[in-house]
Image (cartoon, rainbow, N blue to C red; front, side):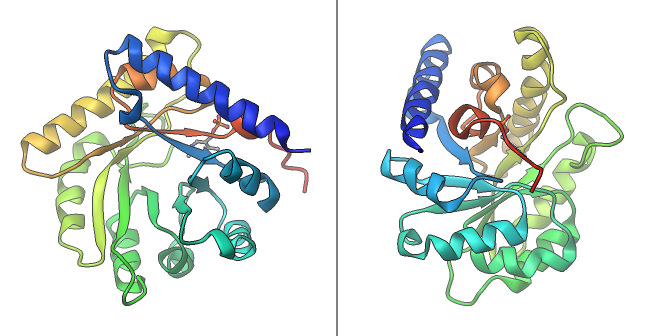
Length: 233
Ligand SMILES: *Cc1c(COP(=O)(O)O)cnc(C)c1O
């Protein structure tokens, strides 16, 4: 039933290795986040058995149920929350996840820090940036990123790791590269400004190569590993 997952994971690892070679980068400098939203715990387990350890989820209720179902693997899996996050859901996320990529307001960061469970490691976070400039997209405007990033570093239970983006889909490699380049340049600026950031979370199934050519250190891949998503239930 889930043997395709091991094969697909292998294909994705090969795409990463090839793109890294083209960019003269080490394949190990690109972490693979397997995005398991809408897929059952059994599929996560199949990917785990094929060596995958980092998983991304978008929906709070769905992910918490899945994390509970996979409690036996909890110490070995890294759970990353990558979906839109409302303030009334921050507590559950702060208590259950290792990373949040979708921080797009200081208020959300403050709540995550305040609600992080005592004794747990700091929650790793990325600031989501809107690099496409679409009105409808979430993420902070590039001009606002520096001020918010600095404010996040003052929060005790968060560790700001870097930037994340979800650019508009684009057909050609050059068009795909442009927004990824903007995110990388923004991260370079923030680092030059003294922030210690090591994560550029960008690239999905359709644009892994463009993201890696522009410096992605973590690609978030769902469809190419688990298949097409069915939202009907
Ligand atoms: C669903 C999702 C992905 C994975 O997208 P695919 O195109 O299926 O690889 C990556 N990042 C975010 C934020 C997502 O919501």
